[in-house]
Image (cartoon, rainbow, N blue to C red; front, side, top):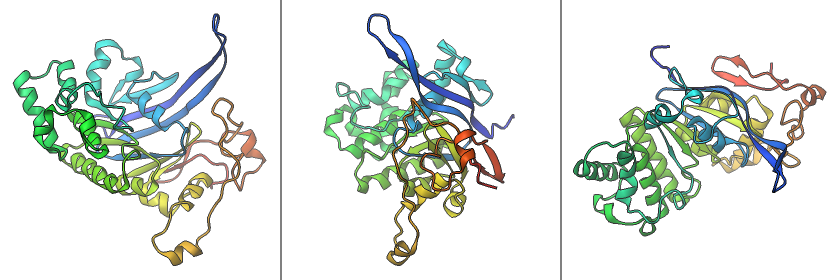
Length: 327
């Protein structure tokens, strides 16, 4: 594919974390299946939203794509290059094109470094520009994300949460990346600040033709920013489709239950609509259910659901789902 319509491709991607017992001679007694056999594409210039409950493997997926965590099996292609086979200097050069905006703006910035040092660090690591041009680049990036260029000598503790996240965005942009993993970039921020950060991300995407994987809990915010949305449950992608199609025609029972929890702004419609209340707790990823992972909480499950893992298939154009009961 020469035009690289699919900038990033995940093929049967898995990440299992071992569970060990013993101190002197640790032995493996199990594994946590954080990401289990995911196959999806992320198209150049789009925002792919990734939603699901806490602990379902969203952040692990994002970190595995960037090879911050090495996968247990499967492939991650950036354009035509398999990143799982890259290492050393080769992988280091590819990382210039792929960056991450972390969830917690308080923990992701070094408190002992100035804002100027934090943003210019990627430039120093890759030995780009000299000292004067780096300073100019930092000031340019600060203005780009809506901060005063004179903040360059301040420390992270002098900023609010929203301002710190803008510093994180500036750092991610320093190397002119093509692809950015946004790992719940607004969940730690006040509601009044969340829209500002999302609007900033949209403006930057249009300005620099960026591609985003946007990980979040807030379905209304994901609906606002995403072109397509993938729904994840216990390490598996259960549905993937266009944004409006997902909200207008959700096929998987888990997607339907998630959307039923999103409040309507119209009180009359809110009273009339049917809520889907899931019973029980999310199973442990160290001992997931057989067959469909969701069958233990699914209100319409049949015997087949507990025995056979549903096939990941395309039911209509641009709509993929993993469910036995979807025609």
